[in-house]
Image 1 (cartoon, rainbow, N blue to C red):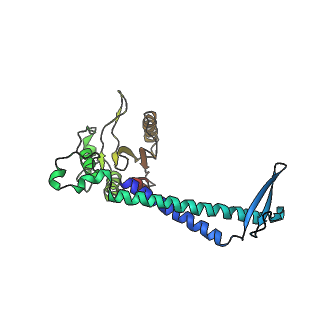
Image 2 (image 1 turned 30 degrees about the vertical axis):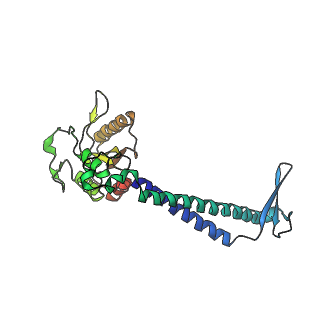
Image 3 (image 1 turned 45 degrees about the vertical axis):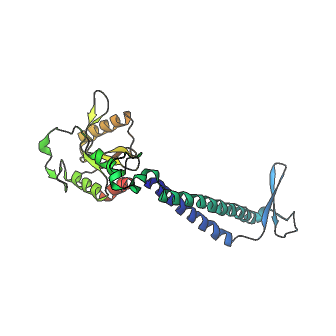
Length: 264
C-alpha cells in the first residue's frame, strides 16, 4: 500500500513540475493561435491574432520561430489542462487509500479480534519477521574465516562485509548472511547477502567482490556472475555487486546508492 501512495505522490510531484514549466512558457508566448494548412504536401502556417480574423497572417520561413512558439503554446495549454485533470483523479485515489486501504483494514479492528483473523495481505512487519525467521541452510565452508563481527553479532568473512551489513541495517533493509540459493540440481551458491525487497516482496542478492586485483579471483567471480545470469538473475535488478581492490577500497556512497530503492 505504501508503494501505491508513494507512486501517487511521485506522480503528483512530476505533474506539478510539468505544469509549472508549461505555465512559465505560456507567460512568454505570443498572443493568438496557429492555423495550419496543407498545400502540395507541405505545411503553411498562419498567425491568427484577431477574433474575427479566421485566416490569419501567413508566416514565412523567416517567421518559423513564431509558428513554433504558437504551436508550443497550444501544446502547453493542453498539457496544463490534462495535468490538472490527472492530478484531480490522483488526489481522489490518494485520499481513498489513506482512508480505506484494504491491506490495513485489520488495524481498524479491536486488538483482540486482530489476533483471530487472517489478513488478506500479510502486513509488512509480519512478512519481514516470517522471512527473517525462515529455516535455511547457511554456508559452512571454512567457518574459521568468519572472524569479523558486525553490530548484530553476526560473524562475517571480511571487514567490508561488516560495513555493508551495517549500511543495510542503517537503511532498515532486512537481510540474511550467506543463505543458500539453489540454482539448479547441481549448483548452489551462498550469496554474501540475501536482501528482502519488502516493497516488491522478493529476494535480491548482493555479492561483494573483495579481491578484484587478483586475476584468479576475477576469473572465478566472472564464472559466478555468468552462472547467476544463466539462471535468470540480472545485474542491478535482483543481483547487486560491490567490489574493491587494495588500491580502491569499498565505496560506501556507491553501496548506499545501489541499496537506496530497498530502503524503508
